[in-house]
Every structure is written in structure tokens, then in C-alpha cells.
Image (cartoon, rainbow, N blue to C red):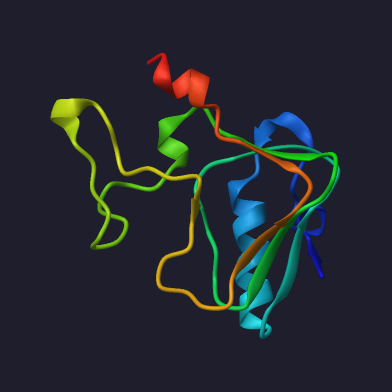
Length: 122
């Protein structure tokens, strides 16, 4: 089990934890896979890339919150199939990406808050 707190994540609803979360995911996958745990608390993040053999577990009482800084997210050319449309005002930015991976699960009873109201009001 890979608790993101052990990789430096801070559950204050303000700190951007992308690096800590991604390091936990990468370490888990490199070690053959397992469970990356988002524990109780509010964790802000930009784009995270899920990797092979990783269960991304959001605990009850945990909230994964999208950053409000667009620079915390992937670029439109992050992978060949991704794109945005400037003329229509939308991008190919994502909170969670599982591109060309296998044996991946997103589970748990926590919340993923993509801050849709914030982004739709831009």
C-alpha cells in the first residue's frame, strides 16, 4: 500500500499535491503494482497519470480536488489522441489520465471534485 502522505502530500485543501500523488503512483507501478491510497482529507491536484497495475483508492472521507490553476494540468499534446479546441474554448486537460495502461482501478468511497462549476464559469 502506498499512502500519498508518505510521499509528501498535504491534506489542507490548498496545497497542490500533484507531485506527491504522481510519485506514489509511479513507485507503486515500478514495484509491480498495488494500491495507492488517498487518505482522509482534502487533496488538491493537477493531472495525475495512472500506471499499470495500480489501484487508485480514494478513502471514505477523502476528497481529490482539481486545482484551479490550468498550468497544473496536462498540455493538449500530452499524448497523440489528446486535443483541445481553442475556437470553442475547451482544452484536452484532464484530472486523471489512464492512457495505454492495463490492470488499473479507481475505487473507494471518497469524492473526486473536478470543480466543474469553476471551469464552466470561466
